[in-house]
Image (tube, rainbow, N blue to C red; front, side, top):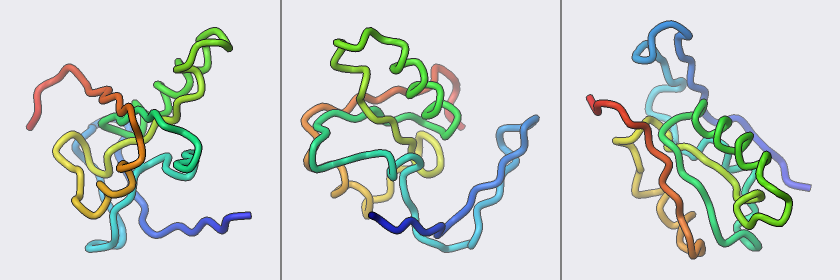
Length: 109
């Protein structure tokens, strides 16, 4: 059994997407949803821009027919939006043969 530990938290306004706080400042980065990934057996992954997108994609994939290969593909999100893929996290993606990028269709700030 793996032990999970909270190392960083992100607080975000429900009304205004840009109002957010990440604590502790200067803490380490991670992928939202990474705890759902079994990198030893899963060879495909979906990467989204944000946490809400990640949850929505995973829920949508569960609606696919059981025989669809995308049904059990895990979804994770970038730590701080589309402009954020810390180099420290890229080795976590090395063993995947397919990486689906599921980005928003909006303006990047």
